[in-house]
Image (cartoon, rainbow, N blue to C red; front, side, top):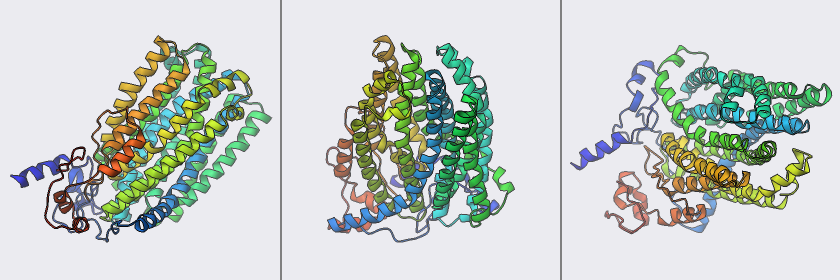
Length: 565
């Protein structure tokens, strides 16, 4: 009966999509679940039950010296991947910021239009496409770790097909933006200008679709330096084009939108040329196999998209809500500036998100769960430190950082009033992306999607609406509701994130406990995690039993320590 229960639980824990093998015939039997057969290295979560390459796992951390060496070695690996990715993402995000800066000096109405166009509509597309592209982080990362490099190009082409189709579906949202904004009560002047700008930036969403899939393909192989330089070059081109189109030629919003579109296409085409010309191992040419098994791939892509979109779209909805407040232009502009600054920090953590996703998926693909766990602990600690430093900078320069966006003193004072909330948000938003990266690396995006749904939409958004409108507390309390939603999310995610075996990495019990601080969760997580001896033996981690000085099995029954079945 014990064997039957274990078998049922293993079936319940199968990931939603397992990739077929490189050979078309044998690979089809592995799709949609695979078979966890008797393989020394253990099957991969998303590689159809194929064995992980048997590579020795990292040694146990027994002393402070071991811990210091582990942190140093893991930091070098993480930042070697994450820093170039962060630079590339920061460059891409700075394209939006530079566009917004040039528009901001045209007046408050154009700035409000650009804030909604970029923070709502462009972010709507970015969140959905980046989320769908994140499926490649799971699939390509685990395939690369298992040595299935030849399949990476097929996955990339399959993702391009899905993402371009998604762009076609999203295009009407941009075309009918004015009607949508008026429908939700947006100011008529702001809605008209925002819709005009949204229509101009439609070409950029197709560039994003190509770019995000290509970047995930390259990240899985740790080829991140060239894409970073491509992004930096596009940023310089965007600045020059904005100066030419807006400041010299006086084209206004259309000119800024044209510079924005061209910059995104520079990134997309640059990465495609690099893949086809210099990535011969993963790219074997165009293949009809890209059209096979589309639906399982779509399922995982949609789970990834929902996980990210529920978070990103929440920020967009907050911006839209402020448009109904008294003095809508000042409210939208001040929140838009704060979210822009918050986005700069977020790009750094998206780099760490991608790095930890690559590290986790590669280590799982190689059958090294302890190495993956070490990477998770290091990246969470370092992300929290960076978030605290960013908050300190915001508080120090709270009265002056908005000058780069506007010369309006009223708007500058409005931004300064909510700078404290911005700083707290930046601390809490430091850990969330890296935990999402852990989920993507293990292929458990669906669980995180439920957490985001509950914390942001069932809790945070209604709270912001209630306090901002019914009690007339204004834009500051709407920002505070976002902060409280993020607190809930962190506590839910960090409560039960554990590496538990070679088959799966993430188990999340989303118990709403938003009154606990993230630091408390981290300490509790580090001190209370104490898996039973029987569980360690089932996971093939008998060496940890030796470190406990025994070979017999006993369950852990201490209060507060979750047992694994």
